[in-house]
Image: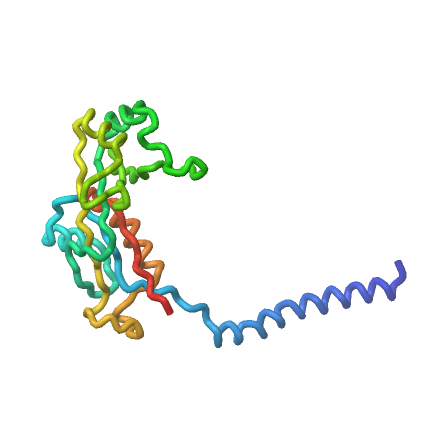
Length: 205
């Protein structure tokens, strides 16, 4: 390789070495002027076990690090009711031997008819409100399994936790929290034995 070619290659390498940092520096102001929009959460929908009282809900929430003031809307009926059967590991093993009681409604969809939330050594078998007709459960195969094993259907206590002062003015930071905080609180709350499910209530921009 001639000396001229070697010099050209060296110059090209030096040029690229200077160009990359310069390009990154020039991009930085654009990103600063157009920051990524933060995902906001205005509240939490929390489903507690049947019989959980409002003072118990308040006591549970006070054990967690909430980044904002909050208001409890206790036992609301506009968030979708959630019925369930709570079973321990031994009973869950017995249910596995009950044939097709939990087969999916549509065979092409692999999910079970009644999904489950597993917590520690027990499970919540979730029963959709769609299986009720005039407040009466209609799935005969599941009813037979419940009767055989003396299982009891229960209804969760649904609470809405509203961040802020109740004004619901989402433009004010005091009335929402970032998604990262909501996910942290969700994960921590779902470790509580009284809490079945937590769903962040996202604010649409």
